[in-house]
Amino acid sequence: MSSQTQPTIRRRHVFYIPGYDPFPPRRYRELYRKESTAQAGISGYEIALKPARDGAARFGWQVEAGIEGQEVHTDVTVLMWSDIVQGSMNRGILGTYFLMLHTAWIYISSGALFRLMRLRKGPVIAALYPVGFLLVQLFLSLAAAAILLWLGKWLLAPRLGLFGDAVSGMVAVALFVGLMRWFKAQDGKFFAYYLMQDYAYSAQLKGANPPELEARISDFVDDIDKALREEVDEVLVVGHSSGAHLGVSVLADLLRRDTPQGASQLAFLSLGQVVPMVSFLPKANRLRGDLQYLSAQKQMTWVDVTAPGDGCAFALCDPVSVTGVAPTEKHWPLVLSAAFTQTLSPERWRALRWRFFRLHFQYLCAFDRPGDYDYFQITAGPQSLAARYGGRHPSPSRIETPVSGFRDVSR
Image (cartoon, rainbow, N blue to C red; front, top):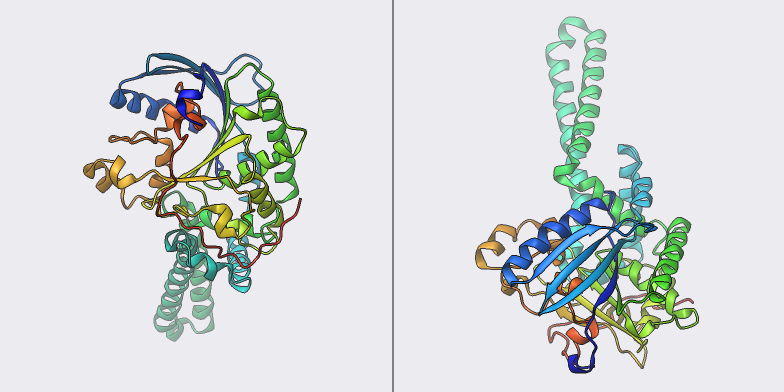
């Protein structure tokens, strides 16, 4: 639908679904505040944040914007699942290494790993990074302990005999344990434990959702259904990273109900998605069915934005098509590129190019050479998602070849 036939958005409700993130939602409010101010200065519009409305059931904030000569009010709600993430991360060193072996076995034995490599090597390398770095940590700790043990045998054993061997062994074990604990304490720099538990959470049931996540999805559906009954011009769901595949299931469940009031103003923006990491797994029937169902719904809009410069996302991979579940009447998603190399200045690109984790969040940040993707105009501007990208052709570089070896669906 063209922008000329779309009414101006005066009020909007945005629901943001984070990825696998243990941090509280205040982090996203401060990110929005900082980056929206920067983008407004670059693009020449006005934007300001206020606390959430009294009585809001979940964490959020309000946005007042003046864009393209229009005043727009937006309520932003963060659909939290950070408590579930925190609970899944309460494993020690030994437990994490067990998860590493279990997760690697699932991806390798199912063939999913090799099929994912046929799409994009970047996110697969990102998935292998925690495995490799955890093994490096283990090797370095063992090597240090072995060297100390050898030195003890050479220096102490000739003088103290068996007692010297015992002392050397205890000190070597203490060094090994101390180094392993030190590496874990430094994970805020390395992200090896964090990423390992991220991939393990999706893989633990071979792609099926754990019961606690299914319960939270149901809560999210209720929240969005309620918003559709309010006096708003658009309800926009934003899913980032692994929050994108949660968004797929949330919206599929919502639309499977009696068509919600106001469903025609419903929109979904998936950012930096890693859907194939889950949909390619053997028991991801639920997600595959949701992808198939949602892609055929005409009463909503789904735009998928990634960028080849983001090594943590399956850039320009149509998540429905590559999973092999595209229906005959497929309408979504519209696959677009954020084109980091064009929308970031050469200086900014050089500064961010090797900061992979930071680049994975660039979709939520300001661009110093913005194109038609502007997160803050999408979430706080006068155009709906449907109007902004109405008539837009998908990226010619998108990947649609069915690759997944598992294509059975449920629901």
